[in-house]
Picture 1 (tube, one colour):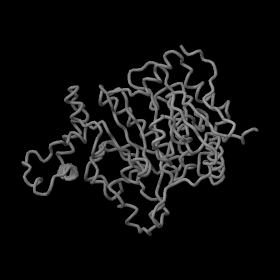
Picture 2 (cartoon, rainbow, N blue to C red; picture 1 turned 30 degrees about the vertical axis):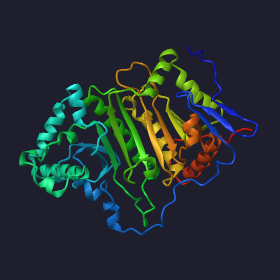
Picture 3 (cartoon, rainbow, N blue to C red; picture 1 turned 120 degrees about the horizontal axis):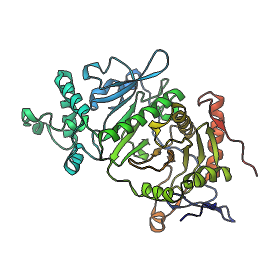
Picture 4 (tube, one colour; picture 1 turned 45 degrees about the horizontal axis):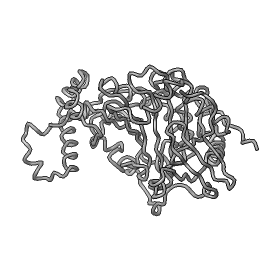
Length: 432
């Protein structure tokens, strides 16, 4: 059983090499001197000019191409008074009637398709999803939309024009359930480029949203995760993540998050739950409290803390909720917004040119333990190689203190420019 004694997860060698061990996973990481100040971001071709049409039609996630994605589960719209409202099940012929700030649709190529849940667990569409499907397909525009998306999926799977032509009339809509009862959803932001973009390098990222937009983004994502748990009772965990830019696994350079219901906990969740069962304070002590002790805290809000993480394969910013509730959707608006503001600031300080993964670590279904909500932002700025594979010791190019200082300096600039929440309290420079 864990004694609860303070641990040394960080050790600095005489030459300046920092050896790290992750308190959750046990991952070993080394940071060698002289690597922290190298340029970040990706090398891209020369920027190309864009016109007004590019803003709305650059990719299949863009505003004028909404019929290229599956039917909408829901969308967020901005009201005249500045608040956000959610609209459920927008019909195909009404997609352009309102301007969505965010949309939630089924992933066209789900990790676990509807058939997985049906064949393995006897899962059927919920009554709500069944009614929605029937109403959507009863409308001609809805039927045409679903068939067009299904045909696009078939073509992507290798079917040709001749193959599509011989599909029996009664089978054209076969597979439509995967859109209405999906356990793998995508949350799509409205902009591909920033509003003032003049070149294709000016992508709209999480950090280019306003703090209010980002709060709505986080709240909408949390509700989407809650919906998947309710729709798929056999789901043990809903994985929430965001891949930004292709080197981080993104299919489109268009801001979006993914929600995936799975029937396993995963090794990391199992390790966390085992630790918390024996030592309920472990995550706080070895995360927030340890970061405070080592001067790694970058910023805080009333209900959350942001610090430079340690023991990660990539430079990582960690945001930990301090709320008594575990589930993001069960938190008060203020508690959830506290996390959202720090995640937004972390993205803004990272910058839109750095490939990164945003990972949510939340409490699995049916667990009584308090599991703090944690969001990790990992900078995908290096490629794992043979040394890491052979030793399982990972070389991280930026040490935790260098990451802390770099991000904190950038956040001071962002706050001076009014680009991050005024409710964020930034840390003081490190002592010594």
